[in-house]
Length: 78
Image (tube, rainbow, N blue to C red):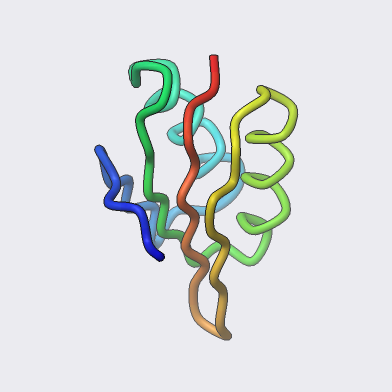
C-alpha cells in the first residue's frame, strides 16, 4: 500500500542542511493527517529527515532508498 501524497517536495541536487530546512517548512504548512513526499539525493538526507520527522512527532510511512536517492512519505501528526 502506497499512500498518495498531498504534497511533493523535490530536494534533488540540494545538500545539507537544505533538504531538512525545506522539509520542515512544508510540514509546517500541511494540515494534520496530510502526507508529504520528499525526494532527495543528499547522502545525509535519509538520517536527517528521519530524525526531523521523529523529533516533530510525525509518522514516517515509507522510506525507500537506493544508491542514488531516498524517498520519504511522512504523515503530519500535529
